[in-house]
Image (cartoon, rainbow, N blue to C red; front, side):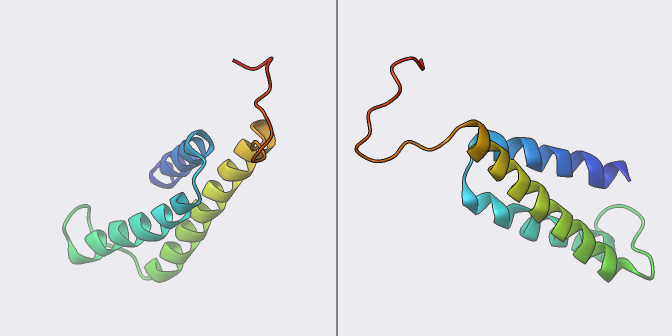
Length: 91
C-alpha cells in the first residue's frame, strides 16, 4: 500500500509546486512502466492475477492526485491576467 500512497502524495505535492498541466502525463507513463517491470521480472516478485485492474486503478489515482495538486495551486496562487500589473503587496 505504501508503494502506491507515497508516490501519489509526491505527485500531489510536485504538481502543486510546479503547476504545469503536462504533469498529468507523469502517472500515465510511470505507473504502466512500473507494472511492466514487475510483469517482466525486472524488479520485485511479479504481479498477481488482477494486476491489470490495479494498474488502471493506481494510474487513475495518480492522475486524480495531479489534478488535485493543480487545482490546489490554482486556488492558492491565482494566475495573473495579461496586462494587469502584479500585486504590489506580494513579494
